[in-house]
Amino acid sequence: MQQNLKLIQAQKIIEGALARSQKEKFKPMGIAVLDHTGNLIAFAREDGASMFRFEIAQAKAWGAVGMGVSSRTLATRAKDNPNFFVSLASTAGGKFLPQTGAVLILSDSGELLGAVGASGGTGDEDELICIAGVESAGFKFGH
Image (tube, rainbow, N blue to C red; front, side, top):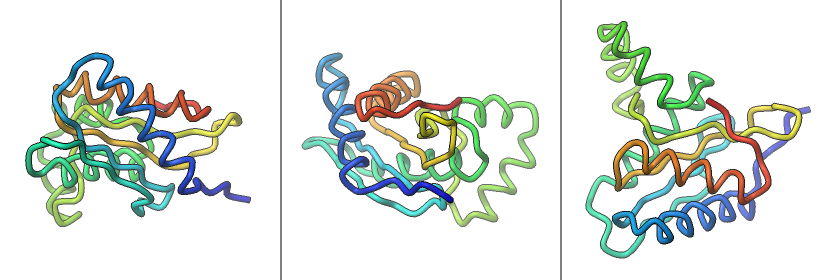
């Protein structure tokens, strides 16, 4: 039976991600948490975050959960097969972004629960806070 990510868990992921971002003094972030079907559970945008933070964070997470790998892995794959990924992004109506900054959310047993994506810093910064958020909520993250 599929375990479902709950709102309170998604909010803990966001809280942990924002705490790490603030600790590192990163630029204001937007963070989106999606369930295993790609549906949005929760989103937060820090004061002062620039536009498109929601769309970018969601698209990174949507691609990760849809393809079952982190957005870093997708970015690497996109370099080797750009035509496929351009076609995929077009087919997905712009909801798919293969750029570093999203990780999978996994249960203790490795079951895919969803993905979290961030936008506002560099891809490495975005990914770092996503990992911190997932771990702070007691889950594993997936590459």
